[in-house]
Length: 212
Image (cartoon, rainbow, N blue to C red):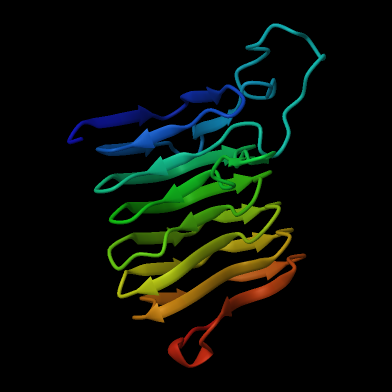
């Protein structure tokens, strides 16, 4: 808690199967347009080469690694960053995993600007039911999620801004918002294609005033 981790442009972070990064303090991912930060699977040879030294024996897949979890009081800021192949989830006698590569817990804050999320197990981004969690996503692309591009449950007075993004090839809605009170700050300039629902799907449409 209280610590800050800054990841500079061009850095590649590879996750082993089922592993996570938990943000209790502050995470700052500072990529650039020409040199993004990349969060990806240990099996992904296209980023940083053959890290696991197995040649072509393995390849990355959706849900290889678990999640970046923004915990209670944590903040995560991503700029010019690529997040891919996360969202591990396994159900046997019990279920394990976050089912999303970016999970914002109660009182967590996540800000994404010029971020690409792809090959996501479950939802691209999931926001916990909370009156204090915050999410801002702008000028970003969220694609090829097994479920929704963004899913926020139980919104209650928390600030959620989703503007000028592209959603494509997500299995469920581009964006799914479930209300228990409160509202969304801004939903403007987004576009979608090839999603299960090419739009922003609220459970109380009267609470939204948006352009999509």
